[in-house]
Length: 121
Image (cartoon, rainbow, N blue to C red; front, side):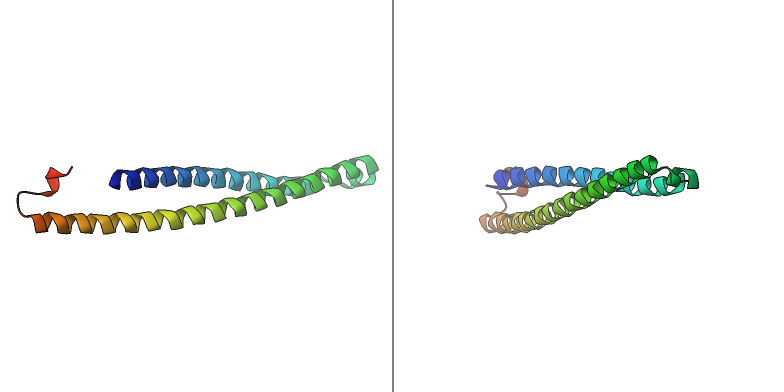
């Protein structure tokens, strides 16, 4: 039973690691996307604004970047919710492991000195 709980904890811990990595990746994407519109604003010159084609192209790219940023934020919020759910499960499992450990220690002390902590491991 303890092995099953430990395996479940390991599985959820790996899920948490993957979620953290995904969150970090999304944060980096958000940072890149927020930096690009700033660079576009700096790159605009009066001549470029006069040229309608350049302006439309920049506005189209800016709209695409804003949509990508919005999608990345939605993905990050979803990842955060999943991470929080996994943390709740992990905490529950940690509590359950601690409870079983206490029960096992109580049984060992009840059975006497011949049954030490080393005899079950």
